View (spheres, helix red, strand yellow):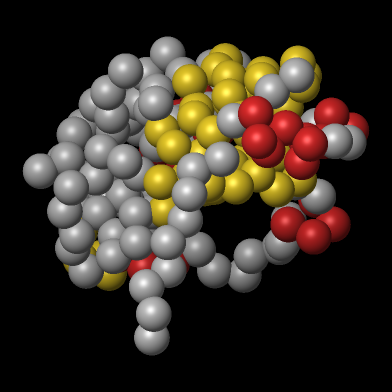
Length: 161
């Protein structure tokens, strides 16, 4: 199979200058504001995006330098398979965040409720549509008993090495 190569369409700006201390999911970054700078050649693709209250950002974990098939996530003290957690030390270091879209100003998206490190390369944007994207989950695996830890959970730098 051929390699798959993506080119960033923009850059994400946030108050988090390093992974350590960054919220680990958008709900833990409630009311944190930032911007998404979409490169000029992609601005036409923003047409009608301002009609959505939330968007999904797909990005490259540019500071992740290692790959591991098991890791201990921030909200547990046991290792799990990398595909059962959302850590950045993945075979393909791709992240997703659902954020609130405050406004579109030319090529700048003003967003809120973010958990992304400043300078993160943006790969894609998708509109969040509850009817498509929100599902009732029967099981949440190992997180079932730990999800209440989210509001205080922060990156501690464990995946940088």
